[in-house]
Image (tube, rainbow, N blue to C red):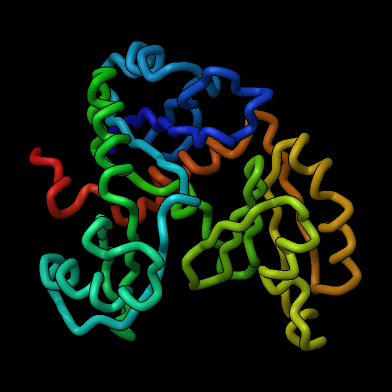
Length: 262
């Protein structure tokens, strides 16, 4: 697999003090997910200039704007699954399903299928902004979906105003990071059952600034669960997202009417 240029669209509320006027951040990685340069931030035009060179472009969009679910669907082909997904999720979505764009992953052995739903107009707007700048993504993933999976740990990735949590074998989900103790409580940390709590091992990814904010609440878990490990990310979470996007790519949002014709 060739090198990749991983670009992340930043939500308007994402760390406004540090990323004033920055629409995106980006980094180039090799086929093994290793960085080929520094993380950069700026406009989409600046990103397009940095992407020149033939690398495959992967775009990440705000996971907080994408609903993830894993319903049981009877279909086998992608087209059939795309037809069934809106019906399966209709009762659980606040928006009119006609206004949403759906994408699906591969069905598991239990016939459960990972499904993503995003406002169609918003998704189209993201693509139009990228293309207007000269960026044509080969794949588009919600940043929450490239939070690394860990078979032995609950993964907690701190990302500015939000926190992503991913349990072994499950889809990730995003929560508001402030207050952190409330976010952990909603995430089920620590588990109420003492046996479950001792069997829970937590892996935390965080920038130094995010860790300082979350540290008191996370440290309070050390005596209540099996273990807590922390990996600080000096350049933020993008290198972690990019590594997962290249080495363990999830399903792309570029499906249905947005399918890229190679």
